[in-house]
Amino acid sequence: MAKYDYLIVGAGLFGATVAYRAKQAGKKVLVIDKRDHIAGNVYTETIEGINVHKYGAHIFHTDYKDVWEFVNSFVEFNRYTNSPVARIGNEIYNMPFNMNTFAKIWDDVFTPEDAKRRIEEERKEMAGKDPQNLEEQAISLVGRSIYEKLIKGYTEKQWHRDCTELPADIIKRLPVRFIYDNNYFNDRYQGIPIGGYTKLVEGMLDGVEVRLNTNFFDNKAEYKDIAKKIIYTGMIDEYFDFKLGRLEYRSLRFDTQILDEENHQGNAVVNYTGHEVEYTRVIEHKHFESTESPKTVITYEYPDDWDDPKKEAYYVINDKKNNELAEKYRDLAKEEENVIFGGRLAEYKYYDMDDVIKKALDIDI
Ligand code: FAD
Ligand code: UDP
Image 1 (tube, rainbow, N blue to C red):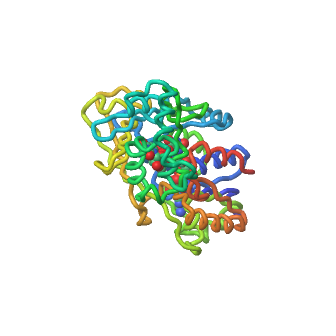
Image 2: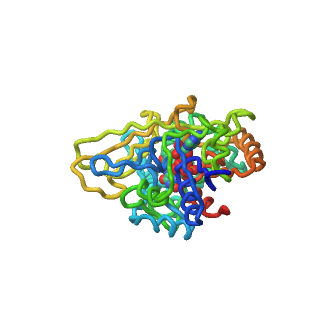
Image 3: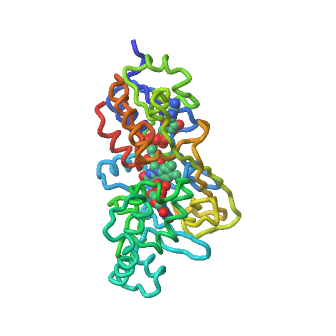
């Protein structure tokens, strides 16, 4: 007889949402995670009174009302609106691409009509062509001047590939707006959990048995018998022992520093879009929650190859080769009895937090 109804592999947002729902339904649940903390990539830790996003800047944004109500039932959210600035050399631009960006790039642009005329001129090089890669997609969206200052360097650092070899889709995440509006997201709801994301996940896992520092693959055979159903949120290719070949991922390296100054960069997120520095973003955590402190904590985010299983696999790579292999793994996953594969790594999808929670709210318990 299985001891638990559910074994949940991974205490990130997918695992925690399912754990909460299963507990509410009166099921016996065990959550394991190989890390020494809960919350997966949204984990926050308090340093100098500031909630530090340990795995990079996380801004909650969603159009799903049920997801917004769900997360707000555990913790109150503030009204933070993400409006990163991009720095290249000695210049600063507003993101995402909007009238503030266009008016700074071109000195004869004041109105939406001016901006459209400029972009139209610059995209003539794409006339009659359907964008086949990220470079062509970017030029046809915002023209070559913006592509070269704000997209090319950042993207090549992030993905360690030429923009001509990357899928156009990656850039479609970013809004292009002909109004003076620096909000990075189009979604109806947006904010940061007051007190940090760890508090949100603690709320979801309240009363659930959690074992940390516990890797599913150290005892796979035993874990498979411990519960009637398994929810698996780790890497899908690893679950199948890489038998169809290895999927590719991108990793990151974070360098976090405590500084003896009150306000280092004046914004939570500054993107570095040129090749003159290796990092892509600098995060100043106190600005997410307007925390008052004489000190500040900043994190440099460096893109990194995922070439060692000890590194975290942060990003899936949705190019043709990896998508095709992932599809084969997803077919195998469908055949696996009593195992549900969910979340960014187990579905091999570039999901945001709300996508992951939405999926977890929609599965049958
Ligand atoms: P994870 O958080 O990765 O959780 C999976 C868990 O499973 C991990 O804790 C892992 O340790 C555990 N695990 C894996 N394998 C095993 C095993 N074998 N045994 C035991 N445990 C295992 N989304 C947004 O909406 N807004 C943002 O601003 C945003 N910014 C981001 C910035 C960065 C730098 C990154 C990398 C992602 C960002 N995201 C953002 C995406 C967001 O992090 C994910 O959508 C979400 O955290 C995915 O949750 P998950 O449960 O699928 O995965
Ligand atoms: N991007 C860019 N310049 C920027 C920010 C983003 O060119 O200043 C591109 C880059 O290719 C990146 C993609 O847009 O991979 C998606 O950006 P997003 O901020 O959504 O990345 P994430 O938060 O997922 O790392």
